[in-house]
Length: 408
Image (tube, rainbow, N blue to C red):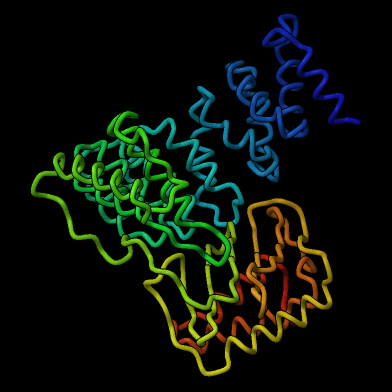
């Protein structure tokens, strides 16, 4: 009822503020921005920013409270960059240094949209952040500063483990006149890979085509559809034409792509996968195949051998968990933390998905007990793959930051 009342009050108030009492209007907008319907929080936050000092004053009070920026909620937090008060921008930058901040990608995005040249070193530091969404948003901020420094930093992002970061870096470099980076976007048009049932190749093709359309003009990609298989005759002809155009722009600088940027091949026999996306601990993507291989990350450049029977044991644990869980497939509330399991059982063409999600607060019992043996088996299996020292500890820490403790 309270949210509905706030929504009604907000949507039926025509003027930007109450001329008789700007402070009261600022407090009202603050309440809508932090407690109102999610659909109107962003609008209320921007209207609050447009009020100048009256709006900034009530937000500063929140920032000075014990919970600081966390009391703002995600919409008002991201809108801090829209305030003229420089202290808001300072607060936004300081919040990015807090590894417990659940909204760091939104903060980086907000700052990058209004990037200042003198902030380039700070954005450059974010290009190595453990969270790919932060790295992706930082690209735009890096591009605003010194051109030579920007190009050097963005070239390093062309070998990022995350495809979206690579595409954004390539796009930014091309805008800066380094047309050799267009090769990364052309290669993504050839991607047709999946991560179990997730069509990563199609996503990559769509984003690459959109970027090329902005760089070369919409007419350059007319007739191309990311929904078409890249090996179809029509798609191949269009990709070849686009590549010819890009090669002409790049001249003799057309590069040989690194392995990480090449269109991944199909992973045969993938039957188990887990996505661990933590707003604090970073990201881990792991897949297991029927021939006892562990595939790390999005593509096919990091594949490790496992002891015989490793995947069969995981499938056994998965089947046991599904029998207990029944038809329940989602636990928790939407948030920045995500633990998602994919189980493709024998005889099934698609994978069963179990998802745990939450916001910044810890939820000790979010993961159902039936999934604990699965997580423990995944940790042990990954440890047996011969990854770097501390791997088991890292993956356990990430699991527990998402779904809670695995053991007493």
